[in-house]
Image 1 (tube, each protein chain N blue to C red):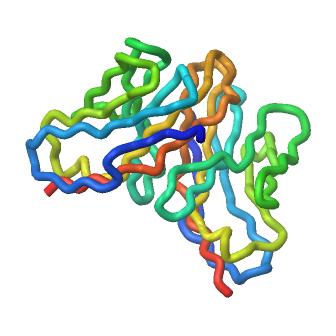
Image 2: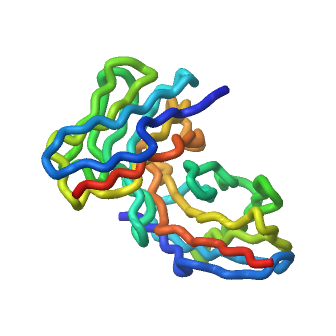
Image 3: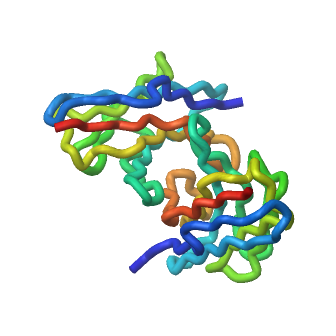
Length: 114
Length: 115
């Protein structure tokens, strides 16, 4: 079975500071990896995805993530956060050998303070 | 505007009173799915549909029903709601026709409270 672990339930940071949101997964087969963002009172939006190729993936709003196969990680980073980045962030995976089904992590709430 | 529309946004009901949460998408997507979001658990899939008249169970289907009579609509039905179904529900759709990298498009959610 596959699983997605987001160890940090909440990450408080000051505005303009860098941030890293951690995501680890377990799977017996290769996976596609995604980060989704949920702003208050809204649905989830795709932030970025890793399918193949370069392990550093750039997404919207200045976010990027790096796929590390040996550590089975897909951490999300931003060098300088804004107040508007306050949201909940979800890591998700899809197995390459099965039906189209996303498995989500439990989410990390990013709280950006002035 | 391309979107997934859920109604209602908020719903308070009592145990045992049947309810339906509607979901409609205007993007001609084949795939639609329902999730529930609970604190500390992330999103868990309830049911999904690969096409009209084709539905299947997700991870937490107990107590829910769905139907897919038309491509655009995918209602979620709770025949006899219970307090443990109090949650935030999301409908999502995707153009998926075999490519796993197809992104999901989410509605804005329905917050259900069952007393």
